[in-house]
Image (tube, rainbow, N blue to C red; front, side, top):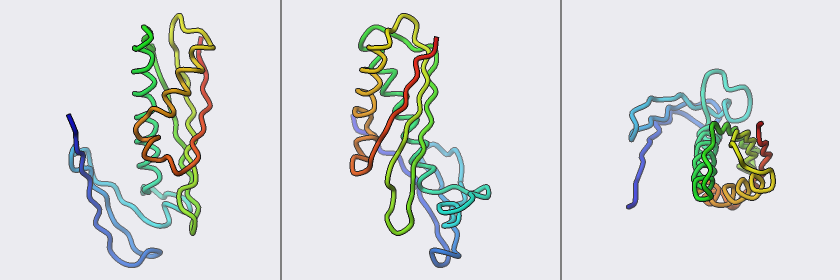
Length: 142
């Protein structure tokens, strides 16, 4: 079954000096201020498309990893994933670096590495970001 999620943005002014806000319509979780400066300098309490992509990528990878573990009979006690999405003005989004630490009782380091890499490529957000470099640092916590 397909699911569609919706957000919208209202922007005022030009790119450099303008500002806007993005609203998460499907969840109703809030409205977030966005600016060019938040993309290229300090965020100053505002967000950027890259930060929103980073949130989506870290959540998607964590879900994909947990699903892959379940397929092999394992359940993580905890998965912590951070995504660093890089934006270069004039070039665009150039990469997403995932850093994940997971505590999975009974899982070998070899299986952890294989499942982590499979989740990186199998995550739907990774698929949507296929035109950029996606890297992963994964640590199996004891």
